[in-house]
Amino acid sequence: MMALTTHILDIAHGRPAASVQVQLFSIDEAGTRTQLREDWTNDDGRLNVPMLHADQLKAGEYEMLFFIGNYFASIEQAPADEPRFLQHVCIRFGISAPEEHYHIPLLISPWGYQTYRGS
Image (cartoon, rainbow, N blue to C red; front, side):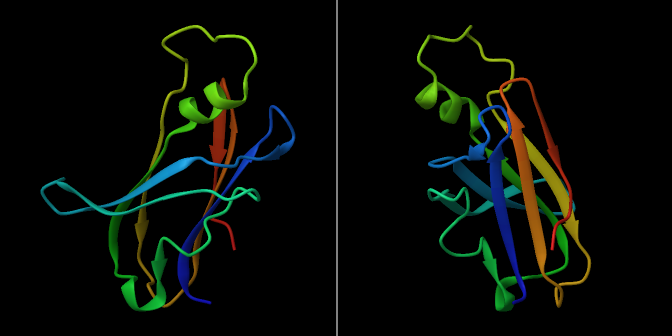
């Protein structure tokens, strides 16, 4: 399936990150961001539908914005320091081959994150 998808895993608690708000933007040559989509992850840390379907994939620069501070605030028992160390994770990436599948996994903790181009 050719599409743009994402998956968020909470490595601090060893589980998928549910109910995380995710926004997708396209970035034009002048650096202007245009929001294309907004969604929330399901109980498996995935979106129910791709951020972009095959017919929507175009070469260019994009940005995914993950609202992980809200996620950690919703699952933690004790109040955290404010502001949180990581409130948002912003991943800017390029699509050069729109005929291929692009998957953006995000591994998160309150103190760090990791991403890569998945399959």
